[in-house]
Length: 265
Length: 76
Image (cartoon, rainbow over all chains, first blue to last red):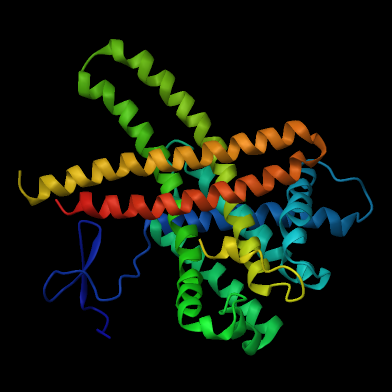
């Protein structure tokens, strides 16, 4: 570790004072981090507001923001978590994770659509961090529930033992491609929309003509609305895929091994 | 044409072929899901969920290919 005072600030970048290069461990607060904090505050604040009303009047009909959040939570519980995590104990234990995941990604996606804001999920670092937590949840939960032996047996993918030299590397690869696909999917979907918007608006500057503007702005509005849909869809897909992968990793050792067709891709 | 030009060419062509494959895949998936939903409207909800998962996994494979294309394009 370099001691304090070894760094300087040059044009808003933290560099080493000795040679002016980037520090070995760059922990500077970027705008991505700030927007994640804003997202966290929004999610925590909204759920705090809704939760306070439940505590004050548990049996009153839900109202306002409480109603909206209840719809989201119930939808995630009934449509996403319950069909995949089969036991009710696990559903209760992991609802906070899945609701948090959905709301956090959704809020970050939607924040990026406001003018002057930044899409934190449009950077591969943020989505990779989310996927790493998903990886830990998938495998940690599988090891805790079926035991380390069951988890290792799962690496066989339901094939006979003599196929282990082929199946085990494929399944180990599958373990890592799942979070990688989650990472790239969210990152690519969120940044692709922004790049299209940038190119459409950029056409006006490229042709230097005011007559391009109506076409350009019309298409931009269309893409913008499409992106609003994509925000919800990608948050949902990230959540449901995490839930599906958790369900596959837990496995139902009695009946279904057809799920492996999905886990291999 | 130098190596960088070839890399950009490969990235562009690869991107196009990837989109062809994925468009075909997701199109077939959506067609089958619509057909199933039209035949059995009561199962439409389940079919839609399964379709979205399948579409997401197909898209995942496409994204792997696109990442290769991006790496090729960034060589320049």
